Amino acid sequence: MIGHLNDSQYDIINTANSSVLDKSLGRPSTRDDILFIMYGVLVPLVVFFGYVGNVMTVVVLQKKTMKPITSIYLQALVFSDIAFITCAFIALSMPILLATCLDPDIGLNVFNTRGYIAINFFLMTSLLCNEYILVLVSIDRYVCVCHSQKHTQIFSRTKVILSIIGVVCFSAIYNIPRIVAVKIEVSPCSNTSASVTCYSVLMTEFGESFLYQKVYAVWIYAVVNFVIPLMVIVNLNIPIVRKLWRKQIKCKRLGMRRNSAKDHVTLVLILIMAIFALIQTLGFINQVYYTYSLEDSHSTTYLVDVVNVLYVINSSINFIIYIAIGEKFRTTFSQLVQARCIKKTGQ
Image (cartoon, rainbow, N blue to C red; front, side):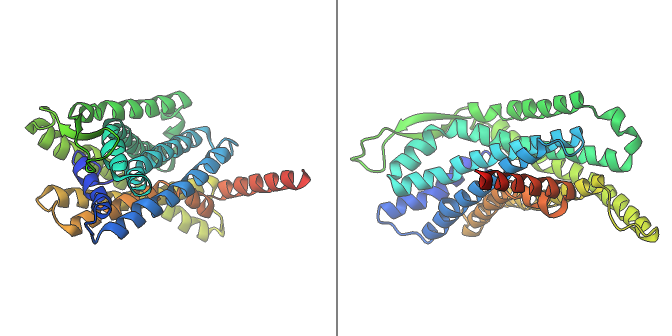
C-alpha cells in the first residue's frame, strides 16, 4: 500500500523521477543511483516474485482445502495484492525504466503524465480495496475465534461476496474526486528536439479548492486510509490473540500439542495483518510528516521511497507466510508441486 501516493502523489513522483531527467541532462543528483536501484531494480524484482507467489496461492486456494468463507476472503486478498503490485509497478517503475532505457521525455513527460489520471485512480482504488478486505478478514476471524457459535449465522457465501463487492464499489467511488481534481495538458518537452508530444499534470479548480486540498486530501484521507483500518484491525486482533493464547495454555495442560487447522489459518492471517499494521503505521507517520511543512526535506523523500517499497513487498510475500505457518496450505502446496514435477518427469 503506497503510503505517499495520496493527492500529493504527482509532486512526489516527479521528485523521485526528476533525478533521472536531471542525470540525462547532465545535472548529477545524489538520489539518482538510489532511486534507480529502488524503483528500477528492486520493485520490478519484488513484483515478479509477487506475481509468481500470488498466482501459486490462487491455484492452491482453488483446491478448496479450507472453509469456503475463508477461501473467498483469501482469494479476494490475493487478487487485490496482484492488482496493487501491478499498479505500483506501472506508477513507480515504468516511468524510471522508460526514462532510463528510452528517453527521459517518454518516461516522465509522456507515460508518467499522460496516463497519470488512470494510473492514480486504479492504484489508490486497489490500495483501498486491499486495506478493507483485510478489515473484513479481521471481522471474520474475530467472530470465528471469539464468537464461533454465531459465525455461521453472520457469514454466508452470499454475504461474503456481497461484502467484497461493496468494498470494491466503495473504493472506486471514494477515489472519483482524484479524477476530477487534475487535468492533462500539452506542454513543452525537456528536450527541445524531442519528436514526441509531452504533457503536464495540472490541478483543476476543484483540485485547488480547500475542500479537496485539506478536507479530502488530508483529513478524510487520513481517516479512511489509516485510522479506520488500523483501529479495526488492532482492536479485533488483540482479543483473537488472547483467545488463542488461552487455548494454547489449555492444550498444553491437556497434553495436546497441535493446533487445529482453524487456528493455523487464524495465525497466518494475524501475522499478515500485523505486518500490514506496522507498514500502515509507517505510512501514516510519513503522511503526517509530509503534510506538515517538511516536503522539501531529503529525509522525508527517502522515507516516502522506503515506505513505497515496503508496501510493494508486503503485497508480494503473503504466500511465504501461508507456507511457513499454514499447515494445510503447506501440505496442499507441496502436493501440487510434487504432482507437477511427476507429470513433467513422466513426459
